[in-house]
Length: 201
Image 1 (cartoon, rainbow, N blue to C red):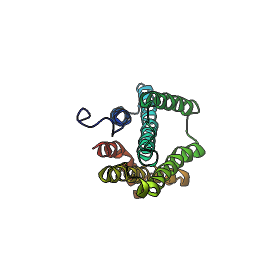
Image 2: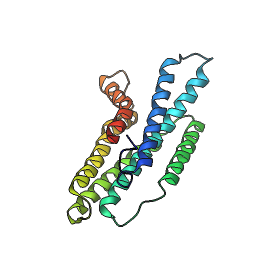
Image 3: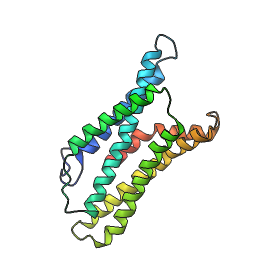
């Protein structure tokens, strides 16, 4: 599929890394669900959970990269966005470092959870609003490409609102996981990798 798309119009590197982070999420989830909670296998489960969290952080970061790159196609069409490979490597490094810091302190605090959820949310909103504001004045981008870009930005924003923000609210309010609504939110979070595949196509 990637060999057939036009490389100048699609940020191939970001989408590829997004799919890699999805693959890591799938693997981490499978291992976590398969491994039983025993003392002998606790370390493997703990490592799998850490890898899963690292993949989730990278997943959100690459979605921000895609939103920013697509926004710049409309708002700054004269800019030639380069260095996507270097930025992707930097995202993976920062995701690993962040996960090590969280694992060192053994649990994520409420303020850190708010930061990791609200900052991407505001970035998605800013890129969408900025794109819609600039859209009528841009003539160098075809109409079909404009519609595709706006659709991507809307999908990214809705994806984040449905999957990550409800979990943050439940965590802050300390709602019991036995209630129906939090279980629905957890299932939405597990649906996150599928949303990225939909985004690619």
